[in-house]
Amino acid sequence: MGRDLDIAKPAFYQDILCELYERLRYGKSDPRIISVTEITQCLLYSYFHRHRNVCVPQIGSLVIGTAGHRMVMDILSEKGLIVERFVYAKRDNIKLIGRVDVYDPNTNTVIEIKFLRKIPPEPYKDHVLQTAIYKEMINADRALLVYIQTDDLSNVKIWRIKRKHNILDYAFERAKTLSESLLHSTPPKPEKGRWCRYCPYAFDCASLWKKLRKTMWKD
Image (cartoon, rainbow, N blue to C red; front, side, top):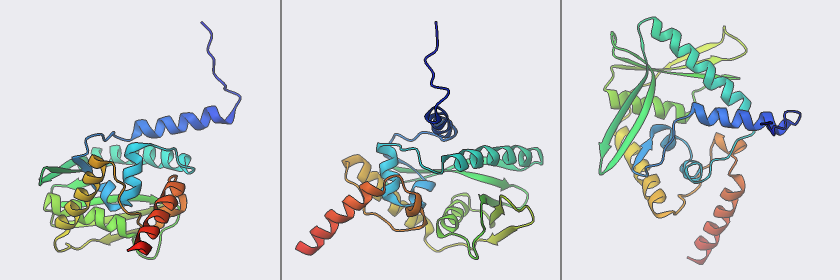
């Protein structure tokens, strides 16, 4: 039986990268189970991603970054550190889940590692929140956010993330908002951030903003 594959067309390889990226991610279907990543980014993006996954333009970098990240985790595991530790917390019938990149049981330290094309002067807010939430979920004594520049190994920055007051209250408040939106199929409000530049749901977001402005004007 012959294969009907368009191996001479760019779309064939683009589709492979998109499929690979989905395989590298873990699925989320239960609206009562919300991930830490989902609440530290734009809630509208998280909502749309649950309803209609779209392959983003920078998919190549994401696939390479995710695969490389996991290979680094393998080496760290060989050195006696606990990698990709699954964590969760429950409140008001909502389960908040996540995977801590690295956990050092000897020093009770949470470590989040991010590979970036260019390291910013200060860590991104969503990365800080993610690390702080994991620190609270594990009740760690210390939390480190590590930035590694992909094209310059000598450029590595490490920030020590301090404990943030009521961070789990904040996390569950956002988790509840997303959960209710998913349950009732009502999109949450758009949130501007660094993710907007490459957002595959930009058109949907703009349409929603337009409707919200009309409603506000009437009120």
